[in-house]
Image 1 (tube, rainbow, N blue to C red):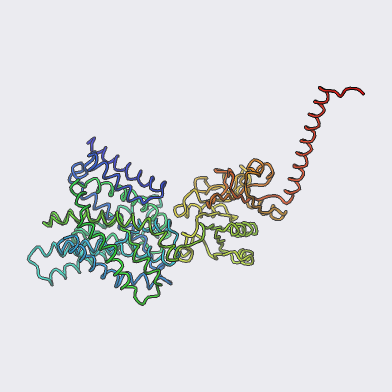
Image 2: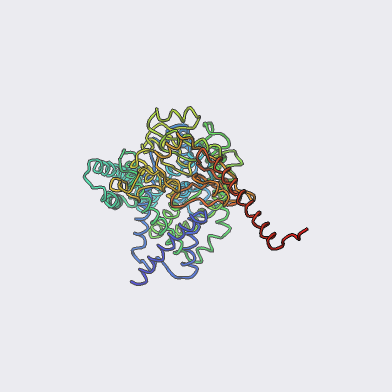
Length: 631
């Protein structure tokens, strides 16, 4: 019992620790998680999940895979695919998926030496390009909108399709082992798959309707949803073995397109659960590998299989499926190269390897090292090359991380104009057309609409923004915007204007935990900033040098206040929690009063007078000590 608890604790610590370290070092998390599992498993022998967990090992993996696939389905919104990339995305699904499946099966059979049944199943799993891996890579590479959206949606759509193909092949292989005709096998597969998908759709619609009608209180929605997902998975498996993966995926897609008001909260909860499962499953699977299995993963046979998948299967599938589409040659070349596999490929491979081995296909266990090999190769090669390849093909966004300003005013427009002068893109969003007039007149990009609307994400690409500044005159709305977009941009990049004028308003103020960082060190209110704008305050850009030090700058700033600091291309925004500390070489944008030059001149005049008086006193002191001889 103690060993089991210790194993759970160690797996959780290593998985989440690897995720944090990857975030801190800007490395692919999947690589660090795999290394952690191999160190404590086959490396040091601290844990052996199959022995430690016993009969619970495979059910744990199955449940984790089901939740991961449901969370993937929850990302699939059909409305977002519509537009300029829709044809390209659907081309990657059909005929892209059948082509990749057929070519991948041949590579698995001829290069990896797998039998045809196992090779076909494995190839179906490998069409999944891993949305949990591709999305961080896209944020890191900062590609242009169209190729980024293409890769993103290919991963999201192919995620459930890979599970579908794997289940179908598994059912065929297990049926084929008995005395069944081809007609019986096909009919059973089609009927079971349709019923499983229908079961997932029905449960998804029922859950969405129950949530919409208020049958479930808000605080119970996440645990109720998780319970229904597990019921969906288990019931579908009773209907047809391993069909639960299809059912939970269909349930996720159904709920994603159900116009559910609380879908974002539920999605964030499921993302958190999925992160825990992804971390745990990956460490468990790598820790379960033996040294012999790892040695097999480093064989020449594995090398040729990986090379065939990278340089033959993927390029051919993309080039053939997108022939004659609206995609440019550069976009097709980039998509042909970038196809990182992730946790779904490894988790599903590990799951089906076990059940196929129990069904008599012992060679199916080779899918696990092969899956790890393809994951390592694609994550490392594609992770480190996506940015330079994107730049080389002219598909990388050259703009710096932008600013999204929510709430339009004269002050916000003046602020946006100076941000543009620093070379960073900026967009002012507001749901009042008249309020956006000053921004339009100043040629500042605008977004007309409610930033919290569900359709906003279809028209505004949040990947273009690195910072959010909520400058609306409604504190509750500003806080809601910060809370909603914090998971996308990160809490450290979310800022909110101070809307409270005194401590007397604390009862009417939004809870601090729901707000973004308080904008600017002194925390001026929006009304105070508007008043200063009318009085002639302006933004002043200053460069800190050896001759003009930060101490001199801060002394000259007087009543002004730094707002943005630019250091070696990195932008920092002033907040009460993190005031700006300028250094030599920094460029500072400060908001200063109109008489700041007069104040500086007066201070310099006072300093020069003081210096002159000190010099005169020194001369007088010297004269007193050494009086001149009388003549």
